[in-house]
Image (cartoon, rainbow, N blue to C red; front, side, top):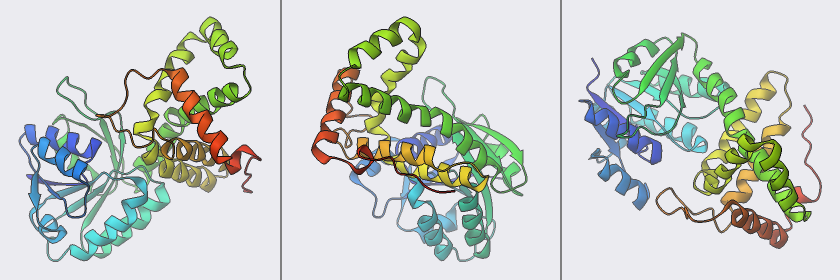
Length: 305
């Protein structure tokens, strides 16, 4: 039976998941060594108990949920594997937005250390007191164990016994929901730089009202872009593994890199300027391109399949 759950790391999603699980009767822990002051504050606000080391986390937890920036998933899994001593009943759940091939690499690292591995892909926004519950799609031999967490602040959906199935679902889903935000950003910035922005917005308001409404989400990309860069690269690898071009989401990665590297890129949900208009956001990002003369603004980068 699952009682003690570790969170790596309690950022925006991790802290909210940890709080939801704690409020539903689980003991929730995190190791905050080398984490930012913001992460420490989020963890404390969520009521997550702190432990001194990864060794301690692996000893006391029945389950560890890895919820990280995609680029950290592999290196953190290696550190966890090095910290595992005798708790062979530990279930390590990789919830990161990474390619199926990367999940399989991580599963080997964890299983070679003597523990159980579950692949998970999160769909949805962080849980909250209003009743929002993100879906944790899970796959792998031990995935059905995670059904103990279902309806405990999150939804858990078992989709198969194969490592990579949950990751594949997440990759395909995010390729659409997040990929389109990169496309919206690209179109709006290009229109701005070609001096037809107002005409484009007017036409969208006339013929594509729902699309224009979605485009307002570009304003808040400043709080997420740093996480989505690596995710787009993982999606590119996933598509490429199935004979589909990598270039669509490599382009999306470049767009999110532009946003993350802009003056807006340091914004987080609690510091995001809710009064900034879409027009103002696009003007700022256009100015960034003018200053940096970014390589992708000269010629499109083509990656051969």
